[in-house]
Image 1 (cartoon, rainbow, N blue to C red):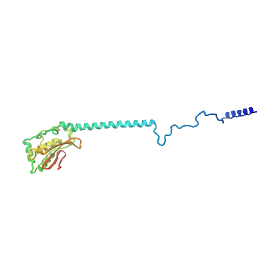
Image 2: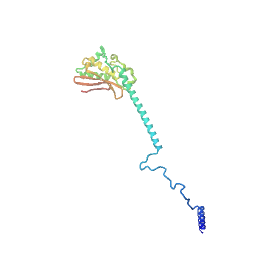
Image 3: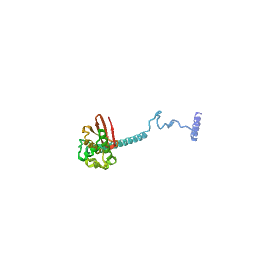
Length: 224
């Protein structure tokens, strides 16, 4: 009797499985799909590929900034060397004593410019130099030979462009040929101008008063 019941049950199970409605016994596979990435909280770390890409972009930008900085610094050093240090060392009148020329022609011009007071004489000579010689900035590189002018007698009274240190030489030559001023009253100043070129002007002392005389930039003003 028992054998018959088991046989009937087994046959029923086999028939149910054949129809497709039965379940296989045991766990043969994964009961649920796991997440592709483990949960890392509200601030997860970026993917590895994205991190590498960001680092590559950062490295390229840093390399570009370093290269541009090097070229800019090199340009500044080269500019300083060409337009300040080189002229300072090789152009006449920037380093060492300046030889003040004297001749009958120079004394004749200086005598015409002399006034009753030292201040009036200073302004007269400044006006003469500033009115006779021009100061076009673009000619500083085009007329390089004028930077080496030393003989004031050859250029006195001839309207032309002259660089700052040659105009200053004409200025102090006339000033010292008048007889109202001495070398102790005059002090040479050298600096870099706002355009980046080397520049020269003079300070003239009259008692307790000091004047800045810069014919190239048309500056004559009282400092003290």
